[in-house]
Image (tube, rainbow over all chains, first blue to last red; front, side, top):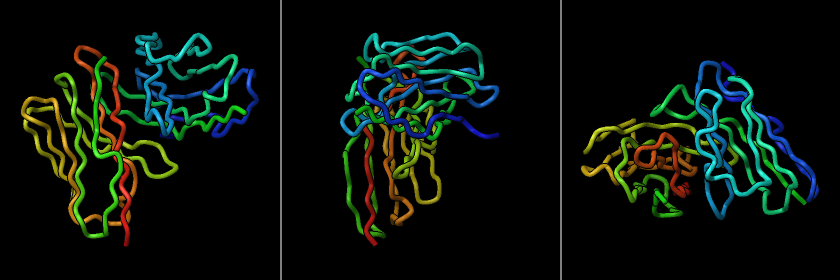
Amino acid sequence: DAGVIQSPRHEVTEMGQEVTLRCKPISGHNSLFWYRQTMMRGLELLIYFNNNVPIDDSGMPEDRFSAKMPNASFSTLKIQPSEPRDSAVYFCASRTGVGEKLFFGSGTQLSVL
Amino acid sequence: GQQVMQIPQYQHVQEGEDFTTYCNSSTTLSNIQWYKQRPGGHPVFLIQLVKSGEVKKQKRLTFQFGEAKKNSSLHITATQTTDVGTYFCAGPPGGYNKLIFGAGTRLAVHP
């Protein structure tokens, strides 16, 4: 199995631009999580899905952030418009079910200038 | 809201010394998980504890879950340079399926 696949690995963009981060979970996993990691705030849960349905998006910072999971093998996290304070590493993770361990992707390093 | 607190934030040790990180939750946890993140890497699952008072060992690593299921610890005996990284505990807030991570303890090991 290839594991959780995220793209791009690195993204550098200018303030105001739209950014789309992509994630392919492990096949057969039914839960998908998006986390953001910064030095100041650690690993923050942004949103998670069960069976492609968003369950809890209380961690999404504001309306500029949106996430979708159109099918079991793909999810996107979009930031529009991006701001410098959005600079962080964004991780996607998946698991087989409630209470099971998370498998993380390699992350997307986002820099907003 | 539910929080998972972790201390210390950072620890420096000499190779061969022991290391311990502590995790505390404001609510009872159904389970607690531990992850390790190497510098520049992503969190990798180490272990899960479910039962009150549970103790599990993985070679030089010992994990404990408190009797009240509100705290946990990870102890590394005789640290090695390969132990370098950040150790996170994570738990689901009561009644929810999401996983909240502690702030992590960054371990530096000097040869």
